Length: 521
Image (cartoon, rainbow, N blue to C red; front, side, top):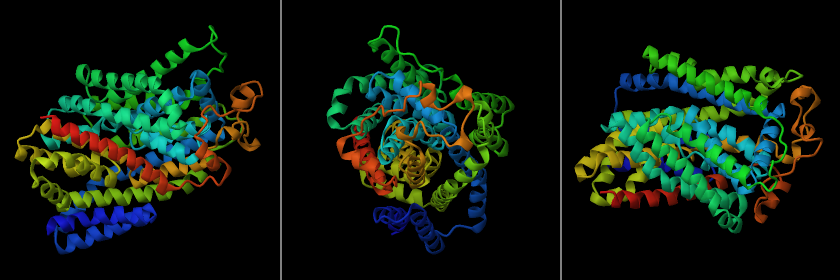
């Protein structure tokens, strides 16, 4: 009976989302359901509930800062023309559309997400995909599918939580998670090419896909094995970008390569952000500070806000753009943030009251068949919490206990939990809403040469059209024929289609992971 009650908040969430109810209302309904169940069946002292929510406060503030800073940075990069220059540079640097989209999906997104976490990979990737020519809805899907190195997101605190609560070695968990990530990279990469290019062109681009997957997976595994867990996703994304760019350079028909506009200044905001994060992390680690408000100030949220404030100066903007960009970002920020906070509160409540543990134990009662369901348990946590850390806090311990009861490898099952929860966090309602808003507001290549006079940049960083000799930008990616209507109709993104598409791809991954879990004994 308790197990059935524990599933109700999850069923309410999934049911309302399937009916097309907005993510915020679905989250509030699920939270209300969980509160009623807590008051009637899973009674928990108010002091314990209050302590848990208070413990989450720094995380909530950090998330809010990260989301606002990320949206603001994206808005500034668009208004100054930097986003269009960067998209044009990627398109010209890659000698094929498949390499261009894989560079963003398996290179840029994993790099950004592994470094900062909290969906920043999506914030960086979707404007680039729009600039390359993808229609808004498809850009949102590809951006979300790029969240494949979330076990190492924000330098792997989620994996650390899983290791501590599951009672397994941190580095071994990283290695096992890397091994399980091979089908994740391959399946999501294949789906990305199909969404972006269509089935026929995706099949023709199999070589590019295998190259990108091999570069990302090989680096992630090697770093986990020989260096350590935190930097695996960062170095994996970086190596993948370098490999694809080098191959494109080697395969260019022109021996000397095409003339390209220098891109260093356009990348300066991202360079400043990366450098600041690495330095602050070193300082915090040397001081022994691992949690609390200092980690919020010196973490991705604080550095994103500082980077956004300095971006107009870094890019040499000729006119003030920060005020108008901040107002636009604020209008897009509040709903995404509120939805995220509600889901975080729900995840915390499920954990503190024991509902998540009750659900996992009920599933374990079915015996060895549980191994097939284990990825789905992790996925539920990731989907609801929108965070690998939150999902592992909910289910890692119970997964480890279940493994012991079944006589199964604890490390392997915690790795299944880690990878599945990480992937599903990319399909959480808050992520989907954020991706849809970014895709709707990011200009496509047809707008690359259009920069409002009040938001123009200085001559040294003029728009990509003038930087390329006055040529109007053309799309690098030609979307499938069925997507042509998307570019000619309203730019509104059907979030239900985005969610269905991403979850369908994830379902294939979870089925594969479950099969591996059965064989991995």
